[in-house]
Image 1 (cartoon, rainbow, N blue to C red):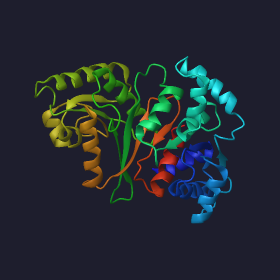
Image 2 (cartoon, rainbow, N blue to C red):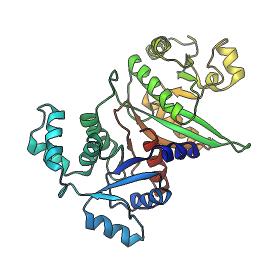
Image 3 (cartoon, helix red, strand yellow):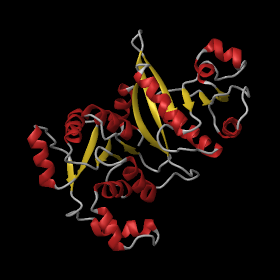
Image 4 (cartoon, helix red, strand yellow):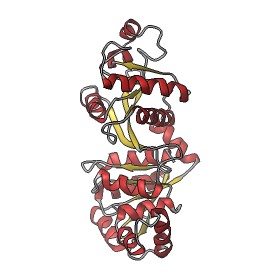
Length: 323
């Protein structure tokens, strides 16, 4: 998977901003990214503090750009732009105060074209990463929500990788049928970036009307709408075994272009999605990459506060590939 993404970035180099420039995991990943020559790096933080943190742990970050909100020369223009984006909801003073924080400052660096993508959350919460993105980067035209997916990867005996996409596993707690359609469209598009040819299964505890419930009806409505607007195989509602096991799929859902061969899974709510990807990760031996935020006008991604340096490195590559 990463060989494909690295090749993309070598042809079209991108720059990522890390909002937590003094974190040792960020600095470790920065050293590796710069050594690879794949990605330009912007570190947010006090210049001397960032350099001291790197020196303390022996990280070579020469080549990274370090930008401090307190001394940034373009701050006045950034404040003016943020006031415009917030459309009277925040005063210039409020905007300047928020821009002293790495999450808002980093997001505006992306908005103003200084960087192509952002990765945060090593110390910030998911909400603190998503909120500035919604306010400043905003959702794509036609999208009403931000969603997320995980790319799941597992090595096979023949040396290839099995790749799956799962959404939404982190953001939308109670999605509507229209939300599920947006999630499916964005997840399928993300899957393509990673070389997955999407076959999209809308999951449920019911297969083809085997159970009756409002939650089943929601998924059925989403499937009907998705088939009208998506250009990849889509089907449902179906249980997970019908989605992945050919013999079960043809028994429970005969004639389906997806049943038994799905590789892109749309969960009915975040509870199912979060449990599902973690079962695949912990019991199925899949590596989980994400949450990858979907539906924004630029790639903004969130790290787990328990992440390690290797996860930062890989998520930076994924985030820039999406740019």
